[in-house]
Length: 263
Image 1 (cartoon, rainbow, N blue to C red):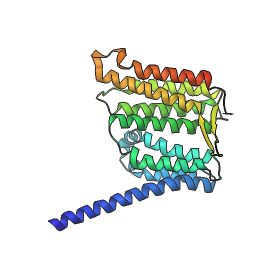
Image 2: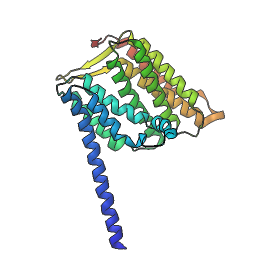
Image 3: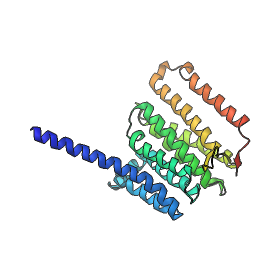
Image 4: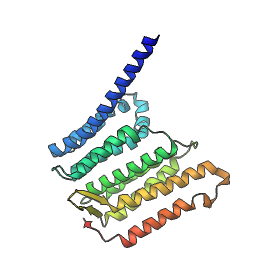
């Protein structure tokens, strides 16, 4: 019996080590293959293949599986696209993206608490909107609107699906529509903050990504509070985070709309 337990523990340790190694390799491969090939195709394929279990189901479960894994897919695809739009020469931003993806795969993605799902949603929103802003900066606004709606919908659904509420479709659609509207407004004047101090890093942060991440935090926090308190809900339950988010967005729009880098 003792030998069986020892063998079982050894197998668990070995499988955990392989799991960690594969995730680290995926993080490096997704970014480096994109940089060295000068195309996002290989990176996208690696991310999609790594999610093979999502697609290896009967057709009637496929859409449910895709919706449940949208946040993880958004993070992975965004990492690849951000790597591509950051240039085909290795820069600090590429190593930062590798680190973010590895940390996501190993430490953030496996978490299941309510606070963790909110963090996961915010990470997906920030990276997803950043990638969309770069990808659609010189294209028609319709693509920014459609893709931003999808990110907003996925981020809100990821949070609200963990709550006791069974009907959150309207809340997720409203969040997606707000994302689409803000993305359309931001597309008219694409502001990017170029961070190149003290060395050239290649890091560019879209203003739109910051604003929508703040909105996603306030919106999902408020919606969660409404579900928890239900009939006893009072505005005082959410006034702190909502007021802080509104002030922060106001500061960004009023005082930080003078872009360091403007498309």
